[in-house]
Image (cartoon, rainbow over all chains, first blue to last red; front, side, top):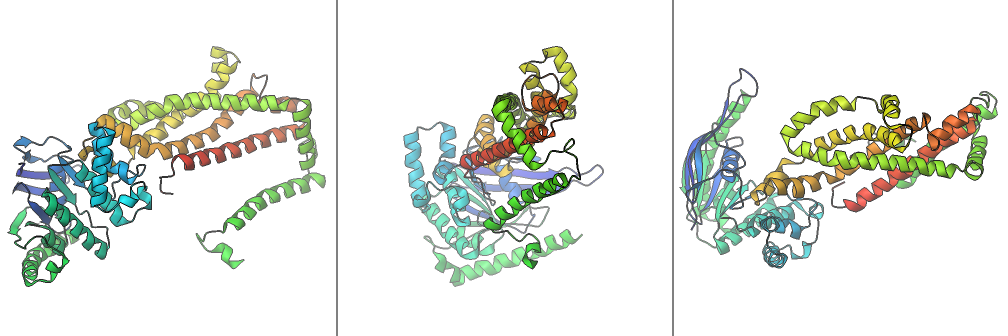
Length: 264
Length: 261
């Protein structure tokens, strides 16, 4: 069992120039993530949701509060918290298989074991025929599938995804959502998934956390009780529409606020 | 004709080669015209044909091949020593900001010290032998490579480094297995560029206190007012430069086929 606790985590960016105002990116935020939770963090652009995720990953340091992983404070990035980035973060000089093996190699795992694990995840994300391809020859969806397999191969306790499908076209994005959900339904990983897409947030999650416009804080925490296994057809059910109506209302207010702030 | 002047419109490969050759043809034609017509006297500029004859004589009567090999050896030697020092140093500077803060101002200063201005000093220190020739090239190349490599390594995409950290890599792994391979194609490109500069330094070094080499031949030919030999010597440098550049590019493509063009 593993658990992740976010306790009073806030982030203030110092002023960009002398005499300027500091930017509060994230107000002190609490979030308890249970083992096997699939939480989507939904919010308008610039609400600090990515900042929160980066702090959990250990890539950014909070100015207040702390992140506890199994009761231990997080001090920096580590393989227990795997991350998939929005932009393509594959190592371009490595093949798909070598990318998937990166974390295993850093751990010093024997080659045979690496091959076994990478083979399993190549199969899982449907890239077996592309194992020896370099990233530049892959489509956007394939690149993100590789990034997902690379993070999963490391067997992290928590999987962090920062708008991983944001750069993909709608059809590919829908397929990727199903792929990710399928993997989660089989393996029950603890997942934190940042997105600004309402459909995506509902479809994937068992909890949707809505964040306010900057300075970000958690506005509401909605449990999604749609049955598993879910397929794309769930998106057309009345229950789904109900969640969507509610979250649309919540997020709309924030988006308007974020927008008017950007204009100032 | 009109489609030649559409901004950024690509040229077909055939036309590209034809245009490239045309550039040379025009220059040679002008050269031939001004010398054959007597507009410029042979004392100052030998014609194309006289230059070729001088080149033939150089290779088959004066053992010019030896000079060429000596010069190529010096360029490669000085360049390799400079690379061996500057590439690792540049990587460390690029990866570790305190090291950069320590060395960057110093090397930025040293970079502007012209290598040719060191020649009298170097002759004093190292005589007129190979050490002095290699030193000139070393001084001319080492600071440039160092700074450029540091900038390249420092510019490796943050996402790659962060991804490596979240996959469990430590500092050492990030530098050796992420920053280094990510920067490698551009480092090679830098080396190609600096190798071109090394050619200028070697010739300058050979103009003073040398007894062999292309630069020495050129200064020697000046004593006999043999403009044909001088021009031929300069051309040989150009041809070798072109060939080494081509080989470097080929090697780069071979080694880094994964890199997006």
